[in-house]
Length: 427
Image: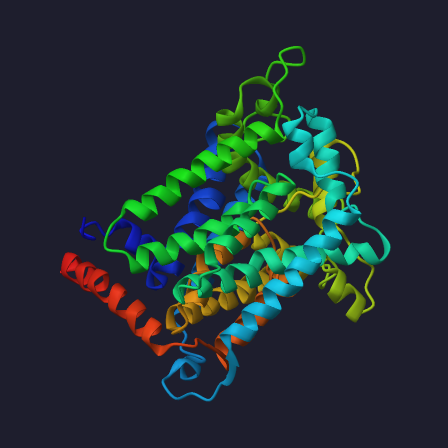
């Protein structure tokens, strides 16, 4: 079946990245809070959140249209060349060493405990201890995991699929197995979304993209079943409002309601709770980068673990392993005020322009997971801990050269018919 439908192509097109990201932000962090405030649960922090979201959306739009470094993406722009084969060997070789050390030193592997019928509380503890609970030298494993899973492996895997490497499916299974091993449901998104992007851009049939979407939903459902054990003897009625952390849908109804609550309500009220903690517990005093352990160390600031403070506010107690992550502009506001929201958003808009201008399809395949990370996390950790600072250095100054130009031409030839189809449909 030929690529007659353009919906997947449009949704993955980097030309629409800023518009789609702005739409998502405005819907969840502006429209939804106003709806909840006036019709369901009056909360002034919902209104404050909507105002921040509106400013952020405008600034992203402005940043996206600024041609600041377009010259870096022109044909013939000087770049440092790296052989792709050497690049992949280093990335996956070091990742295998990381895996061996991580599993050899782990007290328990959450997915194995889940398959044996472990209780929800036990699984929660194991998920936290698997990486975040490491101490001493082993604490570096958590940072390495984030760096590998968030940026480096998705980029390398996308590159391997473009190059039609004979090892691509084996490494895909390895990446997917690690992502599922400690039952963090969002991690498999970093595996499958770049491949979904490539499938849409390369294929003339929508069968493969549809299969990835359906398979992802099934996988998410199964992981939720494993992560949340529903015991008839411990079921309690739902408590609290839907737009509040006290809403116990994960206990009362099942995985579908739990996923809806997690996807719709949790991002919004966690962002508003972040504003509440900042204003009421931290007196609204700007933190000047203290939410980042790296910046706090550089500038000799006392580290403020804002995400952990928000978790304590939501669930009534401090937890050394649990965080409540919030959308990037709440981090920007807590650290640098309204000016921080504008500057962070301008940078994000500009970086989305880099995804559009880049000629490296493996890099372009990361734009969706980049936006996903910003939707529920801060920009500072995304750049420093998740490795996107280095991905942008790669995009602007480095070229990972494939061994065969024929493969690159084949990829371009596969994409061109779909692009032409989109142009004709727009006309």
